[in-house]
Length: 190
Image (tube, rainbow, N blue to C red):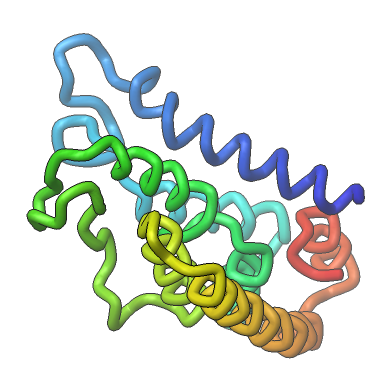
């Protein structure tokens, strides 16, 4: 229960930063920080987040070079296993609702939004979420079709959970006790 509350808090903070941060950070007249023309830059946000984690974990450059790829893998699998973010998570559903208003998107697909991400780079969980979203947007989809896509999503998330457990174990092997405690507090390792 506590972990769910923490995860909800993290998602709420990310959503608040995503939606409100660029508006607040941009000076009048545009040209703010974050990207071209003051636009929000997710890569820059990730970079700052990883720098803060490096600092919190007390890792020097040599240790971080080993730790960062493992931590990044754990964070990505954690996100997938929880169904947070990505195209098919909460943000994907908001986009799906936006797409139901009608009109055409840039891809000329009627009420459906065009892909935001190259399908070749999507994770299995993101692909399953996307397929379920597409099925749900189809008002004539049968319960069997919906159930098939829902089962595929659950299986993809379960596989991600198994991969997450292995990645967490691999990460713990190189952590100090203090670093492990910090990551437990952050919800990245159990």
